[in-house]
Image 1 (spheres, rainbow, N blue to C red):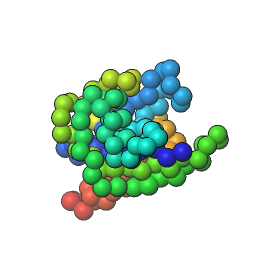
Image 2: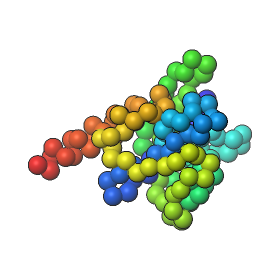
Image 3: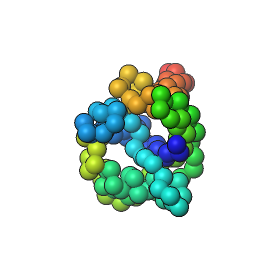
Length: 134
């Protein structure tokens, strides 16, 4: 299954959303995004998913990462795009809640299993930047 995810950064923080209790893998945190509909481009799918989930518009930039994860019932490939909010303010529309989180805090969150590799990568990058500044 091919899915898309948004990596939205603001003031050193990263945007994550929490799945609703009625969804598969309930109440886990994830990078916003979702499935690509038939005939839809990954970029269009991501812009649509963010609008539906977070009630804002984003400019979808370049691919930041490609993640593979083998779930028990399916294999997932996630295209992670750098995104910038261009309209509205992100808020929980079809998700339980949203949060702006320091990258170093991401690995300690209850994330979807497929999101951990990106969380660890972002945390490592942030830690490296912090050491470079001192």
